[in-house]
Length: 485
Image (cartoon, rainbow, N blue to C red; front, top):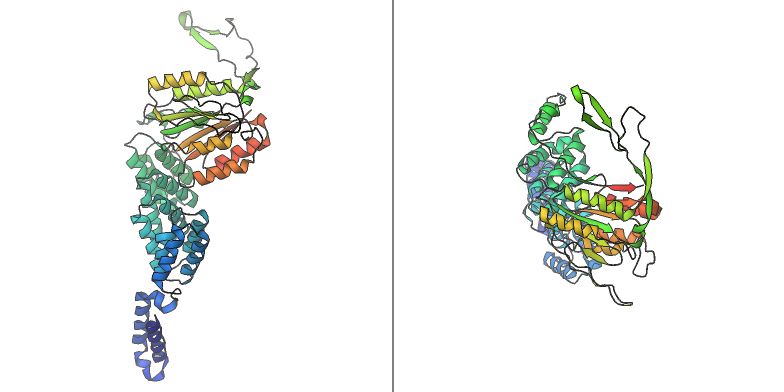
């Protein structure tokens, strides 16, 4: 490095000397060549003790989980502005070891303008096998939106075999909010996945295309035609859905939230408050038309009378919350396609899973015993029937251990979409209120690299704290929040 600096100084003096005016251009050309070959040697300082010492110190800090030291070393390596320092950061510091360490490394990388360092980051994403590292670095690539290589690398991860990486990629592309950058890559991937059973990735691609364009098309071919026309300055002509050859199956919903995945878990609060009845407005049944003689139509009313009277006034009645939930869940399960794998979990002060016996009630001052979480089951007719019987047998009792439920969610490796229904504030094993932030923190830590989507459904009557928890939990985990009256 000292030799390179000496060469730099000598070349600069020679180029500026009047006696060497004829050779100034040549000298400057040599200087810039050296700068291209040894960019760090001409303008950066080597870390104290050398590169091998710096690598050993960073590796030791990571292995011993001394993340305060690791953060200091990452800062020092980044300050060298040397590609070798960033290689060490990529090799050791990025990968889910520590939330704060990942954030620091990410901030340092985002600020980089060196083309060589950016190539190293893109190469680490393309060739790396660590899904956690990829997810951290993908967020860095998103910030380099003006770099064609960064965008190409980001779009290539749409084909990653790890679905959590694909979930993160699609979310980042949606946040870019730039059709010009990503529409073609999204359409190509949608077309590739149309040949497979519909899963969350497929529906996420459709959702992102709709968000970026403001239009909605059923298949990739229609999206390609739309995008080709838009680049040519043409507005798409709305298609007559009745003339489309594409058959679109109606997806089931759970309290108006569409089931947009093939790996789903339903979590049902069965605490004692679920016994509470709420006033429910009943929709009047639509009159049934029956053909009469000579083509005449007779309107048969629910009470059996006929004639033309005023439309019936909506009625209301008290319905226990658990009854409403059972009815809705049974309807949702009935609509699941056979390729979907599903699970059901209930929670109060303990956890129960469909397909396993509930654990015994814990004795006082003893830890709660948990039932083992079974694998998700295929939505076959036989499994649905077993699920119907299990749901009908649910009985409310106990406290609302939302923290425990959220913790146990991530013990099932297959799930990528969760529907959590609750009607109360989180409580501990002694039925004392706990801060909703505890539940949010658990979800943030457990779901940081899992990227499962969490939809929440809550009963508005439970109060502001529960409503805010439902909104925050869904917003934090890319889901929707529905509050029931």
